Image (tube, rainbow, N blue to C red; front, top):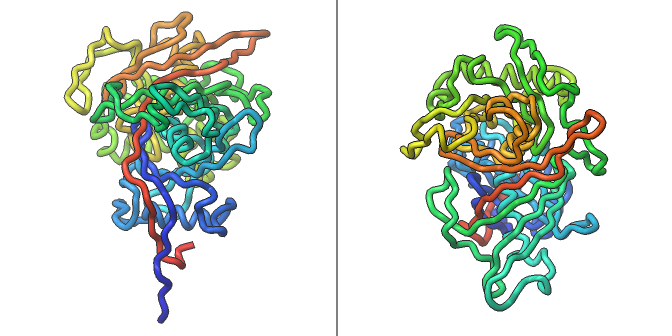
Length: 398
């Protein structure tokens, strides 16, 4: 039997925020994978090492968590006024599919840096002497939205080292400020439905669990917020408290499926299993002291509220960047469960506690003719190249 040799593909392994992923330029992918479809999905699955029934992704670049099973494809933008098109693929760990339904807010922090280093940004805009800041306008192709990244540059190269600390990341790095523009707008910018039911709070009937008060919002990423107390939690839980409880994980997945149906993201309940990346489920509570996963003491006075979020069927170790946008947006709108947990009223920024520590996110919200809109959400992350060169896959893998 003849076996094809491995092929190598130019790639960069990057950390962005509290996530890691394999970054590609579209032009560097094999021809069959340069267009969306089965070949592209098969290639990315093999790169990451999925599907893996052992759940470890040993034979690939994945790290066996939702935060480390990610891929990014970038190209010069076809959208006027933008520098780069950014396509994100969330690779399932134990199943053979790539979810293209949403963005990764954390990896968004690495997109500008990769675009500059990869020659996807006009070299004339990059300061060659001294220290400066390059504004990279990113078209997020999965969801049709604009992200603006402010990337520090030193002597013509991306400045990655610095003293900015991000809870959930061990070492400091340079700060990258991100602006998520019109986070609830549709692809044409015409103002999508931020609250798909038209309500700030809904009663969501979930068979076997009961009727839950929820805030369902499309901002950053579709998210279902529920009060921690309604689920028997305090909002101070760490990963083991949830992820070691099979019944709890099943409960959250049931809530997610019925919420997706109510939000109009799926038409039939069983479709939720093929849409793992969205929507997210998060539970909120009023401020309380706790010890983070790193042993850091978080005082109640240091935060405005507590938030824990599920990602790909598990409690996230920190907070997804897109979910942080949803948190900031919902907090800015009086009457949502997020806003009420943060004390209510007009809020233009909140600092929330998550399993790894705290994060501040701001949003600008306004109301006109009874409809809420948000012009942008802002937060800071960091990014760093971990390895660059080529990834290798068997020639018959796609």
